[in-house]
Image (cartoon, rainbow, N blue to C red; front, top):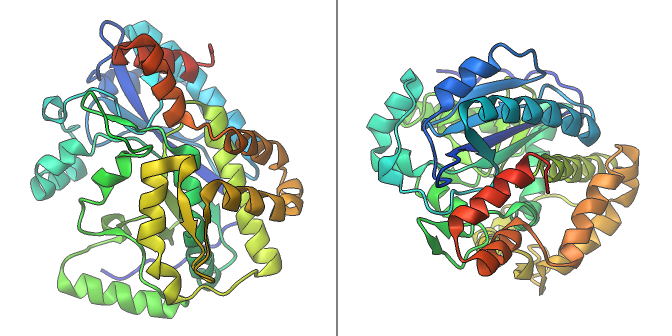
Length: 373
């Protein structure tokens, strides 16, 4: 199968997908209500879409093509409000967060859809362990070559995205000591990690053709990279974010991505190099494990610094671009949480420390998602 041509898209346009948890309101464990939710949501006219995910206790919502993070927020809020109303009818709740804190993977059911059944046959128990919840941000690129340049520039900021969105400290009832444990599950898949270092679409096409000749991949969907090109949309898709606990934070993260992309296009601040990836896995691990308290190694200089300092320096540098694309409020919201070293993982831990009951942490997270706290 040959690679699709890279479609035209408006530079810096945005699209956001959120994978969400469906929980019962008895003990706040995951509940297999995706089909019922989709049936109810199908009757409501909404921007974007609501679709099933790998297991039947998850759904994915997505915006349409947006021009700003404010538009993203408007669309996500509209979808969220409809989701909450539908969930209330079913006596269930919808929750953000990168993992459900105490669900048991072996109790999950694969959603009855050909692709999910095929993946289950291929990946075995990993498919049920893939009951994890992420945010994906698409950013429109002017051309295929510029998309690859954008992808490899964004790779330096992967630790930012992980620490700012981290919301998966608990797995199967235990504190993992990670702020984002979700990404450890993604790493189990053979085609995860980073994209190959190619800076032209011709080079990338040659790589894709080699991979399809091996029979290992059939399409771009088979790559679980942290960032991947999406030629059918004319975008790159950043996939390392945990699903935040609120749509406000989800849209703010898209504004941060858009501001960075604007800076890259306007200033061309640095040329990516293969050597950037020497510290990539280390930086990624640090952000997953320690969140806002992580260490960041600058790939260009080798300097070690606090990740929080690197994020704050970057936010200052992209301020004109945040203003230009209408994301100043989004970046301001995130800056406040960096200054306080407070992300959603920390919020969940604080609730659990106070309540000593993970089900209560999920209940409060459900209230938070619906905008009640």
